Length: 97
Image 1 (tube, one colour):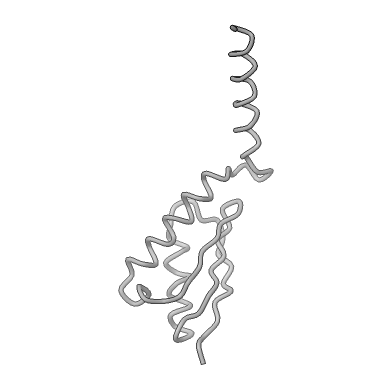
Image 2 (cartoon, rainbow, N blue to C red):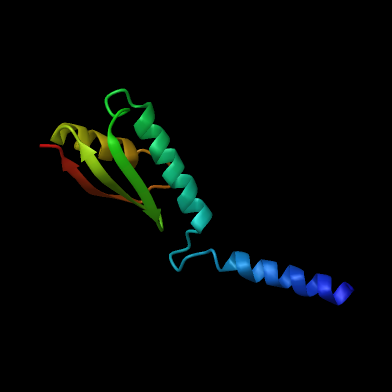
């Protein structure tokens, strides 16, 4: 029974180690960064109702979706850059026509 516990513990530890990416940022770090960026964008009154999607990989945030003006896209990037854990922001936002 003790051996089974050790094997299970080792398996869990290896599984969690697999969540780390080569860049040193874990999936959980990226998920937290995504949540913080989404919240920061939502909390900004000029961006609250925008259709902006956020994804994070290795601390690099990608903003996609639609905004009503170029200025709102610039503002979204500025807001995202200020969030803890963001290394860089890729702006893939499109301006609605």
